[in-house]
Amino acid sequence: MSVTGRTTKIAPSVLSADFTRIADEIRSVEGAGADWIHLDVMDGHFVPNLTWGPKIVADLRRIATLPFDCHLMIEEPERYAGAFREAGADTITVHWEACRHAHRMVQQIKELGAKAGISLNPATPVALLEDLVDDLDLILIMSVNPGFGGQRFIPRALEKVREARALVERSGRSVEIEVDGGIGVENAAAVVAAGASVLVMGSSIFGTGDPAGAVRRIRRALEDSH
Image (cartoon, rainbow, N blue to C red):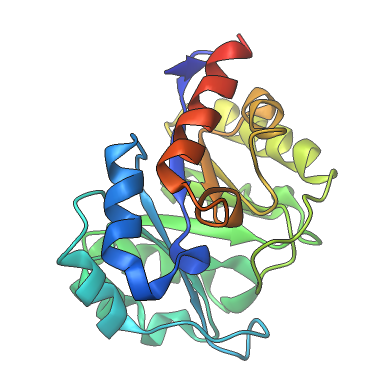
């Protein structure tokens, strides 16, 4: 399915899944046509929450077939990127705000054989990526403050998505524009129309009690919007 000429990927975030039923939860969204599995890694320092380390990612890799989109919301990501790649991450995204040497970090991820992404918090301007866009595979725009699921979408994020799309278009490269936070069936089409190519959704998928049905409803909403 394509909107404004781009293929839109749905990346359910297992941060909101029921981990007592995690295999069933992952299989349900895979069967419903999700494209990636989004893994939010939080360290309790860079963001005020703790999630999981490489061991959990490696265990999930054994039950999932989709690409793993690993979002490192951690300090000193250069110390841990290799472990997450070894655990099965296909894309590794780090935060601009957590990197002293962002270009070096992106090169490290690429040398590990993963796709490299940079994420921007709500208060961080897109213009900071001007000198990095040629090296990136993905730009992640946070549409909530990182750390917890279930937050409301920050409206200003739509303009940042447009700015990121314009930056990518000027570069002439194929770079995914991913958006994370507060996205559901009611605003997914607007986010894609602004320029997003990957939608991360947690509670709006896993919090519904019917993850597969939620993925299908979002697909329909996107299809109906064009």
